[in-house]
Image (cartoon, rainbow, N blue to C red; front, side, top):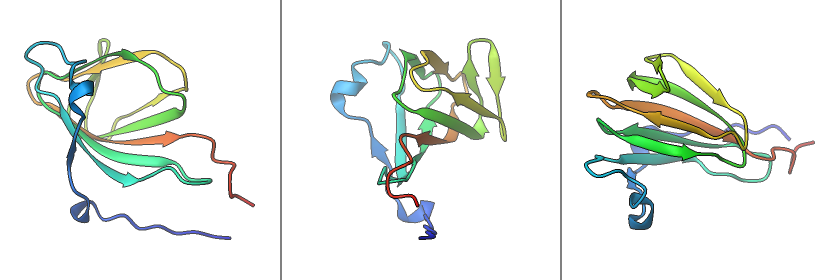
Length: 121
């Protein structure tokens, strides 16, 4: 069965991370906010728009799924690699990585590809 899902960013509320997650921030880190644009479902990826505020640092971590991040604005750093508007980064599942911003922060779309086999014919 074919499926088309339209997501409207303007209709999706911003969320802040949980207080227990904020404990992962370094002192002085301004943090982030995000919008859930598409949640995992059988045969579906998950997608969110995320804003890292200036001087945010994601400590080394990994995810149990492949993911792609597509930069919309600002600058996102992976090590010495600087990603700006239109740049993307692919991270394979279970790969440890870290991201950070500098003075301008960054906005990006993250798409996580878990097991997409469920519900597909």
